Image 1: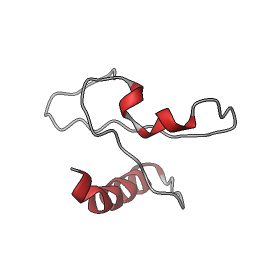
Image 2: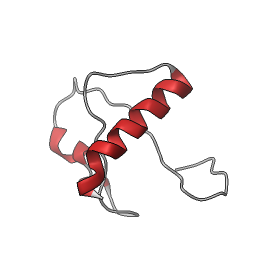
Image 3: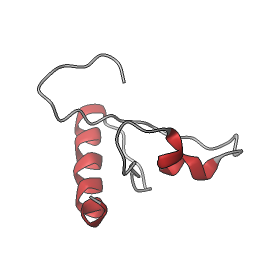
Image 4: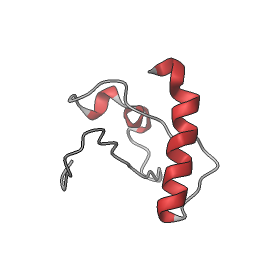
Length: 69
């Protein structure tokens, strides 16, 4: 998954922009583990930075609609 991060990042950025009009100059970062805690995700490195802003997306690869993450 990490090897495909640049391609996946571009796909995510394009999809988010198409669906919401949102675009960013920074890359999307992703967790590399499923069903764990935030500590396994890049957000763990901004602990204590009260001015850090983030947008969160959830990729649901199943065909079942989800209303909670």
